[in-house]
Image (spheres, rainbow, N blue to C red):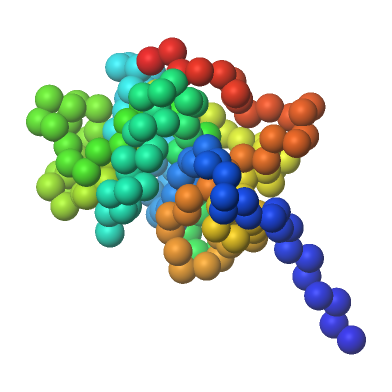
Length: 184
């Protein structure tokens, strides 16, 4: 008899207005350039723009993320990278400053040069002010808001974007500046 694989689930609370964050899964063959190049831009300018290829995120989701940010709620992009087809996943916590449907001309310098030429085709831009590698323990605190499933349990799905929450019951574990208001 085969043992059933345990899947971590949290009970979704559809009635409560939970703080939402966004998780984006990216498969890359660019030898880590996504992280390296965006980190260089953040270090140089204090901000970088990360473009989501393919379909844009929904307008309502984009607006709710921006509303949270404007209210001073620390809101994150969790960027999960997989090098190649069989590499392991690494997740980076990026503090969001804004989510946009288009790229303003004056903000192009915040886009790494290796893909700025693709900017006209990108329909979602994440303005970030930090990029930090997460521990496995903190990665396991991220869950999909609609299902309650651990984000790591859904990474092999075909979906690339998720509306997520952060489990806060483990008071001894904190994400970078978790629970603080945005200063920007």
